Image (cartoon, rainbow, N blue to C red; front, side):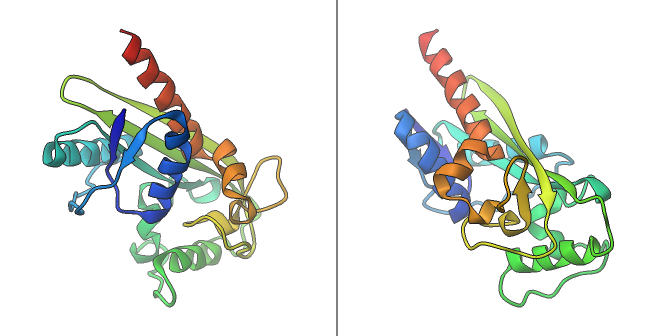
Amino acid sequence: MRLLVATTNKGKLREFKRILEPLGIEVITPYEKIEVRESGTSFLENAYLKAKAYYEKFKMPTVADDSGLIVEAISPYPGIYSSRFYEIDLWGKEEIKESKDEANIRKLLRVLKNEKNRRAKFVAVIVFYDKDKGFFVEGEVKGVITESPTGDKGFGYDPIFIPEGYDRTMAELSPEEKDLISHRGKALRKLYRILKECEKT
C-alpha cells in the first residue's frame, strides 16, 4: 500500500515513515508543497482540508495530520494555532530568534510563568482521503509543561512536555520510545488497523 502524506513538515514525515513503513505501508512525500488555507475551527476540519487538497492534486490515497498542544490553563490554546502560536495577537506576539518552534516555546513559557496548573495534552487527528472512501482517527497523550526546555530530539513543543509516567521530556526520549506513546503514534496505529480491515472487505 502507498500513502501520500499531505505535509512538508520534516518532523512529521519522519514519524510517518518510522511508524508506517515497518508495517508495510510505503510513505510518499509530495514533490511540491500545496498552500492550503487552514480555515477550520478544529484539528479535524483542518486535517480534512489538507487531505482533500493534496488528494485532488496528486490523485492518490492521502493522509493528512493536524495536531497540536492543548494546555489546560489556557485551553483551547495553543490548539489549532500550535504551529503559529508565536504570531497570534493573544498574549502578545513573540519574535523569532532561532526558529518558529523556539518562539512558540518561549511564548508559552512566558504565558505560563506564574501558572501552577501545567497540565497539557498533545492531540493528533489524521484524515484518510481516497476517491471512494474516507475516515479519521485520533490520538492523544497527556502530560505537563516544564519550566524550561530540555532535550534535543523531536520537534515542536517536545522540549517542554513531560508525558504522564515519565520524568523526561518528549525531546529526551528516543524516537522508538516517543512513537510508542505519542499522539501521532497512537493515531497512526489506529489508521493502520482500519486500512487492514478495509483490505479484507
